[in-house]
Amino acid sequence: MTITRRDGLILASTAALTAKETMSAAAASETPMTTPTVKSVTPALFDAWIRMRGGEDGPAYWYSEGLVRSMLDGSVDSRMLGVETWITPKELRTPTSAVSISRKVYFFMARDQDAMMLDQATGKPRRPSIFAYQVRTFTLIDGKIDYKVESHDTRGTRMGGDGSVYTVNAMGDYVHVNYAVFPKRPGTTGGSGEVYDYFDHGPRIAEMPQRYQGTWTGGSTSGQLSNMAHWRYPTFDAMPNEWLKARIRKDGPMWMEPPKTMAEIEKLRPTSVTTALIPA
Amino acid sequence: MRGLIAGLVALAMLPATATAGGFTPELFDAWVKMRTGGDGKPVYWYAEGHVMNNVTGAVVSKMTGVDTSTVFKDPADPAKWVQLSRKIFLSLDPATGELMIDKATGNPRRPIAYPYQVKTYKLEGDEIVYTVESHDTGLVFQEPPKKNYTARKIGTVTHYNYAMFIDRVRQDGTRSQRFEVNDFLVRADAGLPDAKLSEQERFQYTWVGTGPGPIVSSAVSWRYSSFDAMPSQILKDYIRAKAPLWLGPPKDMAEIASLKAQVPYQLSQAK
Image (cartoon, rainbow over all chains, first blue to last red; front, top):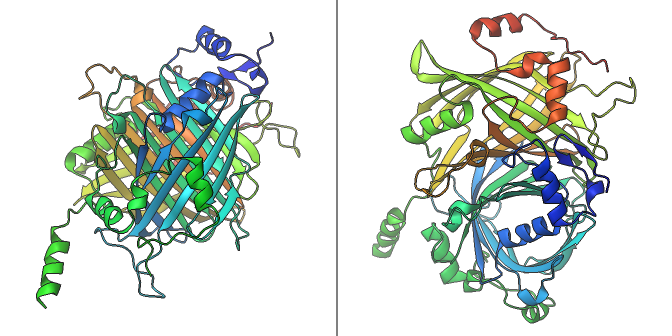
């Protein structure tokens, strides 16, 4: 079998290799396993990605903090603060495919206090970035992850995520995943690429938020650039920000957990969702 | 009125999880050590990533590179750290992984290369005051001092974040505008008795840059303690053959002064 190898980099043409063969090829190189070596996505790395995002044995909670900056001068407009809750039902899982169901809300906060930013035009708190659900389908095809996402932003649904590019790096039991999506939003014509990086530091690290983190940047050309870091937690209560938890408990308890089944998705799909998390 | 006062008191009692910069002296020292090594020995931040069309998502090129640094305390101000670094990034053909060829010349595309950067860090309150002077082979330029860093510690993981908006007029008169954001995730071995983490497992960062034009670029970097330890053979071969200056960081300010006089700095582009 021909292996196209350069710089310890296995090119996509080796995608037909099995996970075992690919990992063996990486291990056999002169590059030690503590360097990033595996680039085409094997079934083993696909599985590592799905497990990293979690939700197979109960909901995963990805707590997020970040900043929104002006692209004119880099000044900080606001903070972002929120959570994405996530499950990957076992009945929708195969060795090379998975469906993840999630729900998320990110508030725009004042930089130096836990208070929501006011919209200058209306004087009311700014509408959060909020989704009643997202359904993501991941399929491993020829060493690449095909990605589809359906999103319900409380007003309706849309499809997005075409053009995604996944890269998976492995260093021993450490895994890094990078991907970008380019959603086409109604009424926008400029670029809106979003870049995601996720890290699993391996089972040697027992504490979930120490083991799993991620970063996200929304490269919109609308004049602002948003950027967050994520930590994974096993429960809603374990997350660190009391303001966030109190706000969701009081005004949007639906966001304390992900949708449980596709039946719930089908029920939500044709409706709009009203929640006190969105300022009236 | 009583309700208003009670509300204000309740607001004041909310835990202030937000901070301007979030730095303590310990987090500041940890930042300097992580970014630069902290002891004068070179560190190598190896990077790889993609350059993409920000509308279609098409991969324009892959990239690989290195940013190598050393550090010392400013003799005139012991509270200030001075980082001397240089970086180079190669464009790779996304299909083959080979060096991207410039169609006009038939030679490999010119890398993004900085013969030096001089960065300074000083803690002021809970923020870093940051300055940077850069030589990008065609231009030497300084950014005004910024307070653009944040730090946040959760458990044993510290997250550092900073962004740069770059707006400069190049020698050819063109205006270069880019927005870049960096996220560093740093794990300490402390508290992880069963986890002997390698340098590149402990230290990594992600970078996203926009522009020029409808472009978004993304890279991840891991820290290595030597040039040879980095994984990309094509990068190491290129530097050894074409750009040996980038085998290590600038040694001292005398070298910086010498390079500052070399504008433009000539990079060989021959095959």
